[in-house]
Length: 259
Image (cartoon, rainbow, N blue to C red):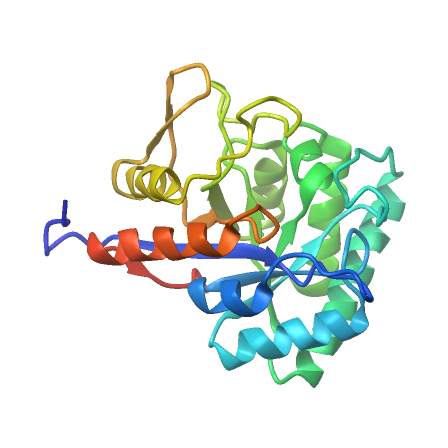
């Protein structure tokens, strides 16, 4: 159902891209990037390599899509989806390194890094792991305190970022199941990743318009998100992203970047 014409509803769509490595290809970045407004580009630690990073930044620039540093644990073999008990100072330096590397390659591609979003296990860890959350926030502040940090609402990293004066961007997930407490259901749990484009599109529209999603247990979870993530590595990601974008546009929601 279309929104009231007077309603000012806007949402950013982001996707994890640039995750190919050497001759190994992950996702269809060329098709996904034009469908979103923010591109979370892997920075070489969990995925990506310098040529992929530069090529992805150039594709984003060509489509008028903002580039964000998608920083993660130093874990190529595990795709950054395994928790690493990294010392806070080391984690800070790892994140600084990743932002800096992407910033240089983005500049070479004619664009720049506009925000930071943690990836995978690091993203989930800093929902509750205060020492690592503080380390990530310190890294962003050390590089550029004007860079927004994309976070899960209610997380300790959001608290640490607010305390440090960083802008936070609350994020929701199009294709991931939620637990009743507002956290993401672990990927190993059946039903944790959603694949039906029409169902995902309807779910995102409810997230954006009503500020709610149904948890895997059947509870209503309240959301107040500025950005919605459509994972670029999810099977059928292009169809999902296209369905989400079309559904939002048809309903009168303005799809635009948060920066």
